Image (cartoon, rainbow, N blue to C red; front, side, top):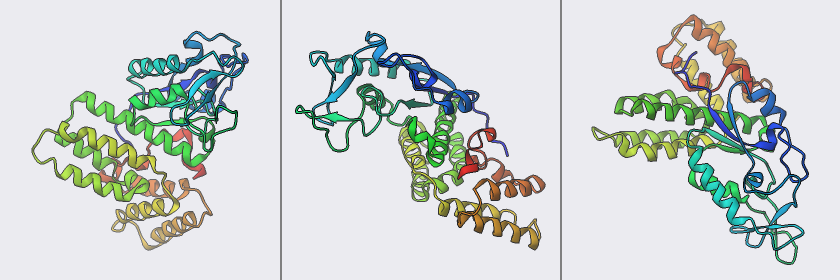
Length: 320
C-alpha cells in the first residue's frame, strides 16, 4: 500500500529533549523516543526559549504566578525577574520563522514550554487548580492553531503517539498539496484518500467535511481550503478507538468480498473480532488485509492513507 510520498517532515522540539544541556540546572531531559526512534523519520528543529532570551546556563528557575490564563513568568527566588514578555515575543518570532514545520514536541511541565497542567502559583504561593500553559508555548501555538503539538511525556502513551504522528504526516501532506497548487480535483482527491482515516478518528466530522466539499461547486477551492484544513486537523486530533478501527476494518473487508473465499473471510472476521476484544493489536488484522489486497489489488484502497499513515518501521500500530 502506498500513498503519495511526503518529504521528511520538520518538527520543532524543545532542545533539552534532544539532549542539549540547556536546562536551568545545566542538565537535559533527553527523550530516547525522539533521539532514537523518531530521528530517522523527522528533521528536528530545536529551540530553548529561556536560553534564547538571554538567561544563562545554569540559571535561576522561573515559575508561573498569577492568573492561570495570563500568568507571569517570574524568578523563583528573585521576584523582580520577569521574563513573561521576552518569552512571549520569542514565541511570536519563532512562530514566524518556523513556518515550514509539521509539528512540535514541547517539554512537559516547563513554565516556558509546557502545553498543559503547568504549575501556576497564586501570589500567596498556593498552586492554582489545573495549572496553565507555558508562556512560549502559548504564544507559539496561538499563531499555529492547526499545528500538531504534543508534550514529550504524553508521547509515551502508544495511542497518543500514533495519533500525533498521523497528524504530523497529514499536516505535511496538506502543505505539499498547497505548494503544488490547490485545485478542486486535488482537494477532492485528498479528502478521498483520508476517508477511512477520518472514519477511524471522527466519523461525524468525516461526513461534515464531505458536506463542506459539496458546497465548493465550481468555485475557487481556496475559498473553503482554510476551513477544510482546520476542520480536518480538529477531526484527526480525536483518537481512534477499537470500536472505530473495527468499523473501518469491516469496511475495508467489503472490498474483498468478491475476490476471497469463505475460509479467508472467516479468518479476517476472527482477527477483527479478536482485535475488537483487545486480544490482538491493530497490526494483526491490518497485516492480513494488506496481504489480501496485495493478492487482489483495489485502486481505491491502495490510495487510502489509513493503510499506512506513517512509516511502517515506526511500528506505531503494534501497541494499539
